[in-house]
Length: 398
Image (cartoon, rainbow, N blue to C red; front, side, top):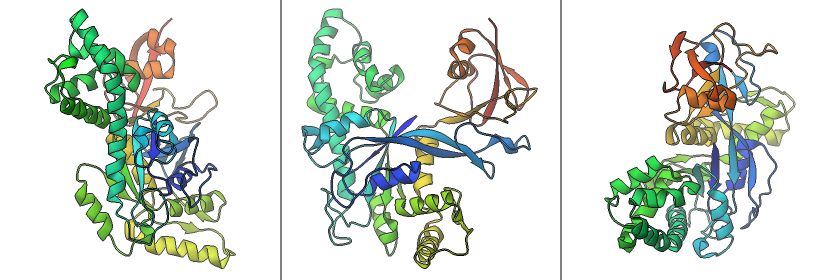
């Protein structure tokens, strides 16, 4: 799974990336600080199955604290986007090419209204952050529309010569864009385009198709950053009301980064996504202590978390609907080194036991005999649909 971070310059996007990954990445108070994409590993949280077995797991990748499993996901932070990017303005073409690697997007906006659409500092509250959401959707969809227009005439002529269905005409072209047969079929039927030759589509129909494909392949969640600069939630509530079909979550990336860094340096004990932390050191510099008190009072007490972990969790489990699946055995949950439930894999919706077997190793899939639900000891066939927190033993033969 790869999640892309997008947005206009200077909205806190790179700080959001650092808060997720704790990787060094350049950030500054001016546009286009990020030119080449930053790639790193973030984590989504899931209630660990080790509590079901009354044990403590030993992850090989990620970590587990208080029976909450933090599972790694790929994060890409791309160059800031400005209006006109779809026409090549700023770093637009590069940006849009980079982001298409991602399966979902988190758009980071400045909810405080202290930076304009170009990323330039302006007086607090003087810029309407709703503009950022509008133009990002417009730029992505305009860019996609341009790609479709370049190819649809050729595809339409091919369809007429070969006399094939619209679905089959588009499938080979769009599979490289992450569009599978199910997505394409649903999109065409929802717009009543499944029986219309591509060359007969109107401009409006092509635009509506573009928007539908963007929704299916690049769903967007809004990270309303810099909530620490708001005196109340009025602006956040207004944005949510204006965009009822888009999930918008308030956050403070700077606070999350500060807490994670302090936890890493054993100054505090902090579980990402929590509404509190525990100070471990007594001799903390006064300035840092005041900053920690500010975070607790003005962010965690008011908003119940910094919002950063909540956003990435929502994308993984609610938007993309991935599931955490553990390999295990009915005789033992340990690997050859004695580690308990060392692995956990994120699987897409409608994954089967056979899909999971292939995820573990090609040989397991090719030689699949059966699977076992380790929790219930039930035998499972290759078409059995998995669910979150399943522990599965794959039995294969040579």
